[in-house]
Length: 339
Image 1 (cartoon, rainbow, N blue to C red):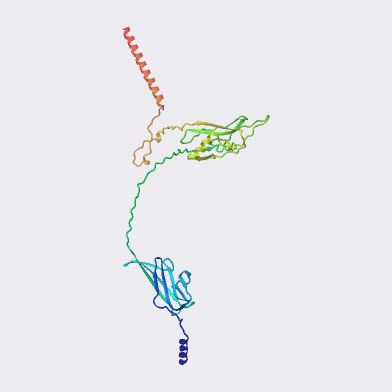
Image 2: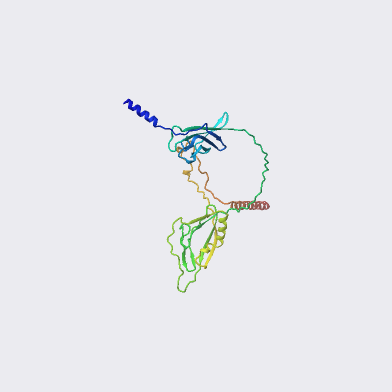
């Protein structure tokens, strides 16, 4: 049995024939500005591959030579896992890669070689000077006329069909006769304005004899249904000014439409003073944290009048007082003359 194993081992050793090729001498390495070039001189014509270790499947990192006794590969710095390492002593950069030369076209055999290729690029200090002249910054004066903004908004009380939108402001119009339309309403105003501008469109039609003018059929308006449209800015203001002159005349159904405009001034709500009853002028002692009464109102019942009325009453009282003195002096003088 041992003799048979020895024979088999001997036969195996005799049949294992290596590839008849190899690298002659040392590889030639060229450290370029953007890449590293590695060349090999082989003993016989080369039929294998030169590639970066671990990147055989990438065509850009492999070179397939054939029929020549020189094999090589060029490795760019930015591909094929080329490593760049900065060094402080000496100052510079090491560029490193591992290159494999394989002599068999399909397999890696024992005659193949792997080389760790490294190039060092010395860092050179060089001072570059240049004279620069920078001119002074110039200023330019630019003027632009900006129109003043005009902010306004409109509240639509009647829609295009003549129906009311807010019953608290204006209810549906009433038409007592063919030439009259109107509705009573309470006075209202904006909180910060005393003047209101009203605009409306009146459609004029020809009435046929023994007939009535068509009246809009409106439902009962809801509360707070007025439509408000707000406009602001110069562009919107110019459009609104044109709309003030002719209110939506382009949207009229026919040409027999008259634009009517009026304004109304409403005064602010006056403050009314109502004196508190005597029972409410002082807070209860148990509700005050300091135990002292707090005077809520000390104004007695009186007459309120304006400054003009007060001046007139004062002058009238002064005139009555002067007349009384004159009458008294006259009476005294007449009595003294009789005696």
